[in-house]
Image (tube, rainbow, N blue to C red):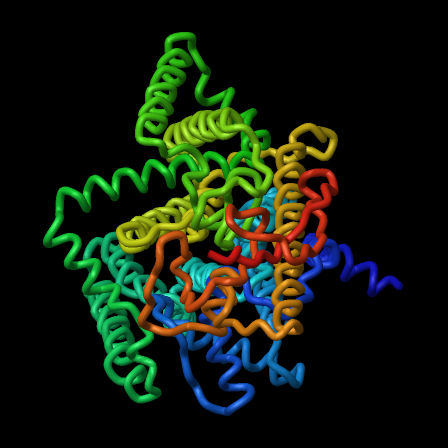
Length: 544
């Protein structure tokens, strides 16, 4: 018992994190052999590997995914069959590992264990990270590997040993084999070493070595590996599209970049709300709000809110994961394509309120970081300077083409790390935990609902198949149309979705659509709305 008590005491924070995740997994319920969001594109090659022993991909996409495909196939092989449930669990394991790595990263940076634990709980309960953990999307595995890569970089900053450089290379290439921006870590870390060591010969050698390895990896995978395994045609030419945009439309590029950085800044303020109460004592002692300063902050943010209103870009900006009052994209024809309000939403003034609160939060927290930038320890200053350099490069690459809220998950992690040194955690001050609890409950309930209605959609799809309706006769939503009915040439008719439709006599939807009859309904519950009963509808188009 004494030995057990010792280990429980030593690893109590990790035990709390694992226990929290286990409870969350049980409550959300990840079981169900159905795709979510874009993960059907990444699951298809897993299915081919498991069932046919060949690597084959379907569709066009940007992420490299090859490492994730291997990881997912391993889980399906252990389970004995291809299933989205096994793929979901494969991501959940990486999500738990990512949370534990984040906790240890905080401790390595010198944060107290209770501060590191609060930071890890904020990270865990963040809606983006939590929701995507219950899918086979690339974002969580990518962020987990980036956190590991940064831990190796921090270890090298502390003790300059070759083993940490080797680990940086392995983990950076691993993250690249899931999403391309992972390879940026190598040249950017090399550039940081040059700046940190003021251009020493050793730093230049490291920079050129890492850059050559990064370039060789990028072009080796693109020009050799992809053609060798026959998957070149499935990837969008992201690099050429990016360069063409800069060269052909430089002013538009800068304008779009500015807009996206404003959105990112507001997202930062929103996702950091659970940290705000913990750093508030430092805010009060540092910023000493004067009446003129308060008026200036409010006036500037009201002006920004008015500008966002004028261009009709109000939080959450149509993201991808976070929307009006829920998580996970509503990819059915009635809501997504026809813009029929068949799902419950909060009044728009709530979104304006959240927009403004997030702006104020971002303003205060950025001011806190700036005012206290010299109070970081020497190690923290060096590490944070690298994180900022890498985040800038990462955001410049990720922000020019299609931009979704899930793309900023790692920069949000960086923002958390910049704030946590100023956090003060006291067990007696229970009120400081309220925003963290609210964010965690929202993430849990909204993710449960996302899987719940997708589970009902899966039942609807099975009902149609049982009634001898083929995939070519229905619009079953983005995921099913893509997974079962993907083809390159599409003849899009007015009122149809863009999701590989050949005949939409039958439609799976959230609610009614004009000129359609309701053939069947599948019941499910929305926990986020107090257990509200709702239905997935199976509609048949009226003749004529």
